[in-house]
Image (tube, rainbow, N blue to C red):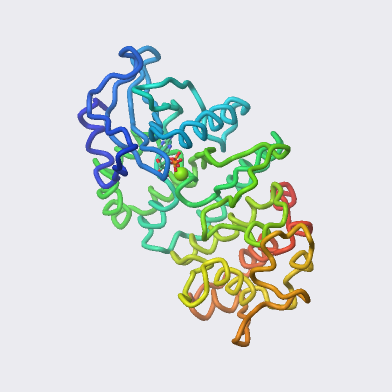
Length: 355
Ligand code: ADP
Ligand code: MG
């Protein structure tokens, strides 16, 4: 594959543009001519990631060019520190290098194929169960490893989980991800095989922290934020497991597990309300009245009763999946319920799920 071919590959991926972003151009050379930019692979809140060529090592790399703003720069330096602590692991993004380009921190890593949001799109909101099981297992292995390094990821979500297709593999399905979707209907067996044989990798350690140096503010992206984080109870490694439980539902249905639907209360209240509906009021743990839960007073009275005009109707996850989505996935629903135990002291760990 030459550079002009690879430019075609990611035509449907956008890069976020604001005054803090660095907009690299095709063919631009960075770090004294070592890295040549090819095209944008994706973007997030902090950065744009570019497919590039390392002209010294003679290989493709991904370069995350972080926005130029003091807070983003500090976060990026922490991300590098965390990436450097990892040894090689099949399910964790591999770090190569870092440098500064025009005041933007740049993080060089291996290139990985597509993220889980793209996979959900390719499968039109119905990712096959065998693929979902495969992804869960690999993400759990990645999390088990990350947690064994005393690190909490703190932002597990579909955009931050990548499927390790090589550029050549993506190319073998056509010249763009869009062609890839067409290909799927023509030969979905081959695509499925490829996905099943790929390494799933956790990326984006921009919000991660060491367990003994936890960030005191709100962590995690809204839809994947754990119960304890919302009420301000101290979180631990298995806050990442809560997020994975939410992702499983999204892989199965294309919908968020916790959709914020009511404009009359603030978002946190709606989130607590949705969690209570799913799990049942009787299953919400006593940590809501614990003094350590510093935000609980916003949602609960001193007896632990949710401030609420309406009666809470609970719904059963397995029943919703079978009745609304026509999915008979009892085992997965059971696993999700273990991951979504609102009491972090009783929730499963990555190792528990794998054993
Ligand atoms: P942010 O911290 O800004 O969210 P991420 O590290 O999550 O940045 O990267 C943004 C997006 O870029 C990801 O969601 C993914 O789609 C893509 N991406 C990131 N790293 C890679 C990589 N190594 N290979 C391929 N795509 C990547
Ligand atoms: Mg991200």
